[in-house]
Image 1 (cartoon, one colour):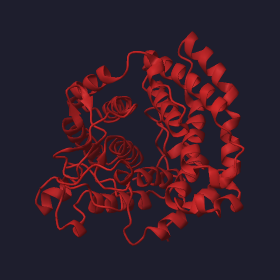
Image 2 (cartoon, one colour):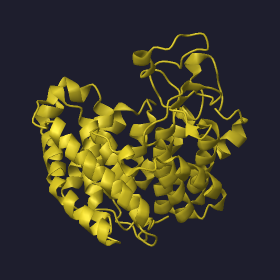
Image 3 (cartoon, helix red, strand yellow):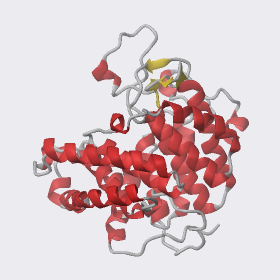
Image 4 (tube, one colour):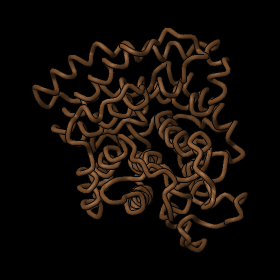
Length: 373
């Protein structure tokens, strides 16, 4: 099938390709992490290596869609037999890919240790739904859209409890591991389900989408955050909703983004040394700021808010320039999270693969070469 027409031709490609080549080499043996892999799939699409994107999707499904054999359990998370599991690899969700097994039934809760334990995160699943939707758009293959829809259905059905979403579920989705609700989980779920329905005509998601919409905080400032990765997520959600012409919610998100960025620059300095900074969180903000360019001013309020947000656009270049310096990426703080850092930096350099595009934006291939060799 033909690849997307929005594949970029710009000098930033070379650095992005180098970063993705390093990532591919380090993870070739099967080391998988769902968040990083979702962005990596989109990067391969942006760089024209559709084959690498498809291969990574397949690998993620066969690693994170199945139990970790080290835990003594085998097979697909869904419990389906091999042939059915191959046809519906997301029907049981996807593991995070954390290094430690999930907390056992009789294990006490340790907040710090929980960050390193496996399970399923709702907001990681929405990232993978988005990646599958981008692959469906780039290839024209319906199966990727179907897998995204099946993942959305099982995620909402199992994470939802009494009008809220659990933060973290067990690997088999049978019990909650963290019962609190993520600040933006319902928003991410709503936007992603809207996207899937618009891209692929999935009327089955209508009830799910409305339920998630009702979970989003009514007051826009309840979405505000000083976390750079969270701000980037808000901006990316606003960009997707702009493409989907959800003007009212776009305005609410831009209000939250403006309040968030004002708070962020007051309490945070980007002038610290590399060891005091987390690259992937800052790069999440840089990616969100890249999305500003494709948010359409569909109303007077949106136009005003975009004008106010213009003042923060230079942060993108500042963050990218800092982490493009080899000496900063040689520091322990970067190398400790090399996979996610490299992939997120590459996404910032070639954001076209990750950003949502209006229907009709995919029609031709630029014939880029393979990244994985």
